[in-house]
Image 1: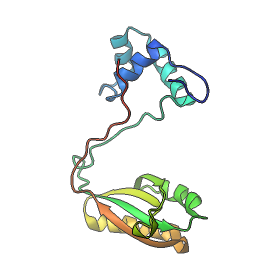
Image 2 (image 1 turned 90 degrees about the horizontal axis):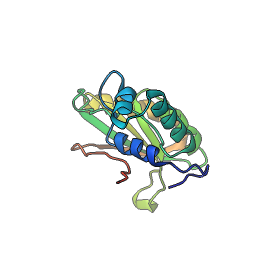
Image 3 (image 1 turned 90 degrees about the vertical axis):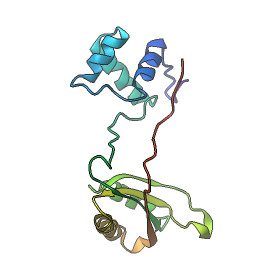
Image 4 (image 1 turned 135 degrees about the horizontal axis):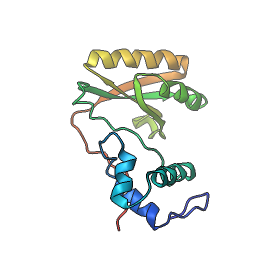
Length: 165
């Protein structure tokens, strides 16, 4: 495994990736706990993760909350048919809205699926989600031709790529 930057991860990087791919320890000092677990210095753990982020081996380190446990039981993927000439610019604006947890562009699937912009929102009820959709609609303005909301019906376990030994 190498990156576009040509940086190949060494054996210690691979051990660190394997130790973190299921999540960071839920402790006040997770990098220190990882360092102890791997027999490394905490500063080395943080420097390695920073380097792997910079060159693209690790894309991001972030929190993945259980929205249901937090009381957000109306989770809706809003889908938008946005003018292709405006979708990148407007997608950036939508992605910055506080109500949007993630936003991305996808190719259309002809007339069966005309949507090219997706924005996930989480609410305590469907009325709250509809309010967020109205906010997104205002942001998109005339560039938006149609939209819909796909509500979650169950929790799916989300995981990224996993590497083995």
